[in-house]
Amino acid sequence: MTYLADVFALARKDLLLELRSRDTVPAMLLFVVSTLVVFHFALPSDSSATAETGLLWVALLFTALLGLVRAFVAEREDRALDGLVLAPCDRSAIWLGKAIGVVAFLVAAEVVALPAYGLFFRPVEWELVAAVALADLGLAAVGTLLAAMAAAGRARELLLPLLFLPLVIPIVVGGVGASATDDPGRYLAFLGLYDAVFAILSWASFEYVVTE
Amino acid sequence: MTTAEKYVTAAYLVVLAVVLLYVVLYAFKLGRLEREVAELAERARRRKDERQEAA
Amino acid sequence: MSTSLRNNQHVVLAAAAGCLLLAGTALAFYWVPNAPIEGFRQRIFYFHVPIALTAYACFGWAAWKALRLLWTRERRYDLESYTAVHMGVIFGILTLVTGSIWARTSWGHWWVWGSRQLVLFLVLFLFYAAYFMLRYSVEPGPRRANMSAVYALFGVALIPISFLAIRLAEDLVHPVVFTHDVQSRLTGSQLLTFLVCLVGMLALAGSLYVNELTGKRLDVSLRELREALE
Image (cartoon, rainbow over all chains, first blue to last red; front, top):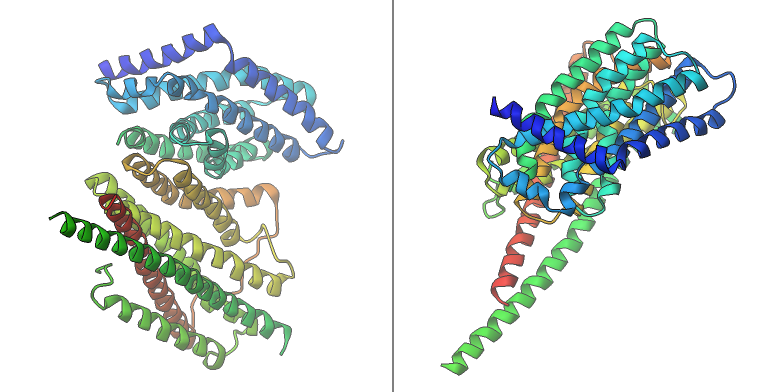
């Protein structure tokens, strides 16, 4: 049970840090709402459900990127990641703890983004909420792993989007499909499949990303 | 040549062009490797001479 | 298969690639009869599909070498995986270009979102191009080798998932799905031509791979030599 204890300790640390410094989540909130407003001006007035939903998902993707870039900044600046890696915990616990933190940030941003979307564009249905919930898991899973990779290199703010975007194209397909078509079940199942495959892969391979 | 024939030939020629481009780039790389080896051989020779003089 | 240039296996490989592709091109242009529906332009198939399959094989090979690296921590697998990804990207670009030419001659456009193969290769190209960005931005060493290996493994997981996503996206965006009228069963002559080209392309990839790998290993040796002679 110490594995789960480690995970929760790590997640708690990230969440407490954020609660005290309050720099990432407010930025994500403001970013997503601003993006939605920009999209209003970018779309014609008679745009379809698919177009509006699609742009919401684009906004969510880039908001997630914003949060992820910050995910390992604190560790890197204080070299705390080396300390974590040397600690006698399973390295994958670091991944899980961080990913839980990222999910929390995303949910916090979406608590504002989805009502804003409902206000600006079209009403939010349960399929969209379910799709966003499933997508958050996938985004956090691969995003945390890729953020750790990018943090090890130069130009990490440039590198993370390049690594992230091709991998999450399936999430966009699943998300838009679930909210804009008549058969959301298929797309939600696909999102679940994506989450399962990439969460397991990320969990198993995180150890190799942070060690020599 | 009909347009269909032109496109088909273009497709095959593109493949040939890319492979030939690879050969050209590789020739550059070989030139660089040769120069580096020559430089290192020169250094090794100088070292050997210095050691013989010191001995 | 030895990947050193010290024995002559690589010469055999290169010669085989040359002969097979020459024969395959000749077969595709002169011997094989026109396809019943598509006509002459169907002949692009004999290069385009083998190139695509070879690209997949390269990515799979890269993932296998990546797995070996993570398993055994032997440094040589890093170069082998890297070279395989490089080959995969080259053949991926060729797939996109030949596919685009085929699309232009079949349907009049240089790019069609309705072609599953093209879209899949575009996504994979973006993914593996980022692989190089990753390698360039991290200091050389075991950490970079590990990260590259993990990324290469994610790539092969992405292939089926992306394909599924693209299929699902078709119902979403309702493009006209473009497929070539390749019959599900190839006739004897078509099959022979296809196989000759396929084995030729695989041999070509193998030949380029061995050459490139040797070049990279020489770079490493030269660097070590240089440091020893400082």
